[in-house]
Amino acid sequence: EPEVTQTPSHQVTQMGQEVILRCVPISNHLYFYWYRQILGQKVEFLVSFYNNEISEKSEIFDDQFSVERPDGSNFTLKIRSTKLEDSAMYFCASSAGTSAYEQYFGPGTRLTVT
Amino acid sequence: AQKVTQAQTEISVVEKEDVTLDCVYETRDTTYYLFWYKQPPSGELVFLIRRNSFDEQNEISGRYSWNFQKSTSSFNFTITASQVVDSAVYFCALSPRNTGFQKLVFGTGTRLLVSP
Image (cartoon, rainbow over all chains, first blue to last red):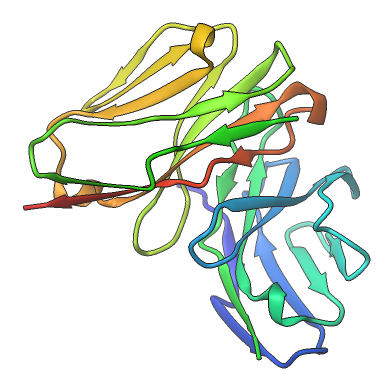
């Protein structure tokens, strides 16, 4: 069964450093998403991406964040200058479409900012 | 504004008991989708069910059943004859039309602990 994969599973970085989280969505999916979950809290939407551009983003997704689909398979989330409060689990998801299509989530990358 | 409320923070049951997880949502959209996801201790999010706002039929899948009541804006999830493997955090989520159905708004989750 096809699945969303994410690397690395755990990333430790120092405050102020840039990090790139990588995702490989399901191959025939068209919509890609990033969510985050601060430890013990709810899952929060960050951004959705379709046709090589951002289609929807939340207030959390400020200028420190960017997304890219550098090739036909990867989907990345970059945080330019990490802050302590960026420590969270970051989930990538993909879907074949919107409305009638469910989002399939990857296993997550745990980001720890020290 | 869209919001999902899962008032039960944690529920503990003994194996074979039935358990219902509550979900209440708020949206001004008349067209939306509702979801349940399971997050086991390993951390991934597992899709369980999707329901659109025009389909109020209850659904049963094995030991799982869902009760959607538009009149009370609720989408409750029942596990019959619970098992230890059901122990997880369960999230209810809403996808409203005004975001092009691209955004999932999650509740805070209910942690279910099933003991043997």
